[in-house]
Amino acid sequence: MARKAQAFGGWGRRLFLWFSPRMLVPIVTCVPLVACGTSSFSIEDAVPDRSIVTGSISQDAPPEIDAVRLSDEATIRNAVSSAIVDEVGPDGIGWANAGTGSRGSIRQVQENRQDGYLCRQFVASRESFDGIHLFRGETCLGPSRIWVMRAFDAVE
Image (cartoon, rainbow, N blue to C red; front, side, top):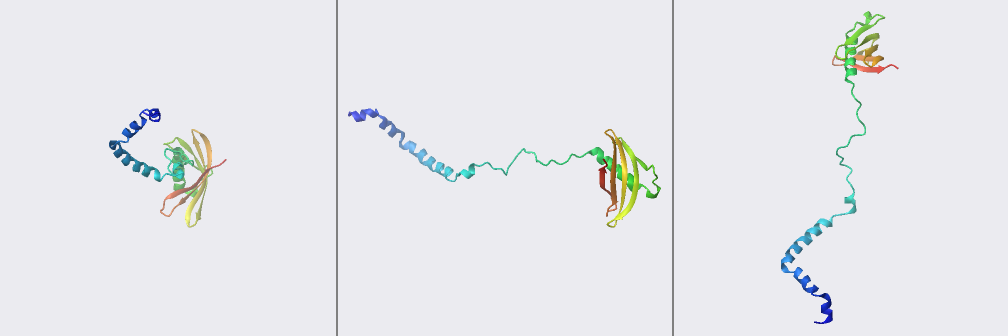
């Protein structure tokens, strides 16, 4: 054998055996599939999709609902709506909520009409486990003949 042929040491024959007809079928099948998979790839597709966020918490959390305060508001609203305004004296009317253990008095009840609806403004004290607080409020008789609390704000 010539020296040039001996340098490869039969490498050409092994390469030829690898490209045999039985290996030609998988190669011919896989090459188009690989080409199809990579043909539509672009750098824009590699950017993370920010429109889908799972397991996240919204930044604007709704305010916590104080069930005790809401129950006391309803009790005060009912006391103001059922009171006879002309008979409320300087001591006011007392109220108590057995469900929350809160109690207090309602004073300075004034009645007027706003936008055609009967409204009552008042000042109420609230004694509860977290202390004694003073509130200014307004309740109005709505169009469905139900009293609705329009304002109930703490006086500082």
